[in-house]
Image (cartoon, rainbow over all chains, first blue to last red; front, top):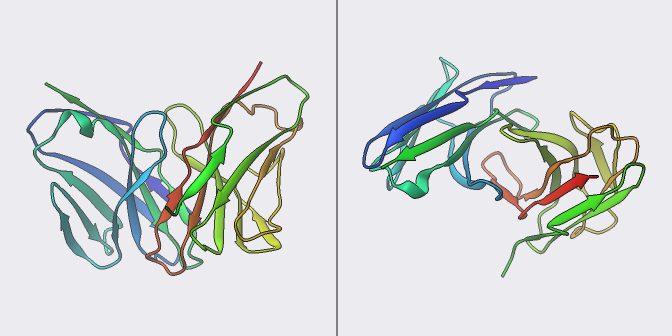
Length: 109
Length: 113
């Protein structure tokens, strides 16, 4: 099975940088996804990591350490519209995703 | 445009009634999924189908049923056996391979009166 843990809530200031952590325990790890979900809407894909290291996509970056079972999502130059929930999801050898509980990020002026 | 369409967006149900949520995709994806989301929670898998005419139970299948008669369609029925059906339901499809992302519909919010 899989177990995905991430903080429930975080608060940050507009223009700042925030790091959202995710730890996972999974049999047959086969990559890790991050999704963004605004309240009442569907999740949208942000990133996928399967190799160790940092993947950068504009203001958002995602990091993976397979040996530590750890990932983080880094959001730079925070904007008010970044207020949302961020979902970490582990992919296993059977190509099934397990989602964490999500981290609700509140960006304040 | 390719995508996933869920309907209805909002649904109210009386206790003891079955309701069916529609999910249609034109992405030509083999795999389709139904998730349930409760307030402030992550996504929990109800059922999934990796190919037409086949589907598997997820983590919380009790009180739900599905069918997959066509590649494009994966309807979910919430039966009266589901004790706490009020939730946000999300349908998704996925292309093959480990890196294939899930594409989600807009969701259906079911409220039991």
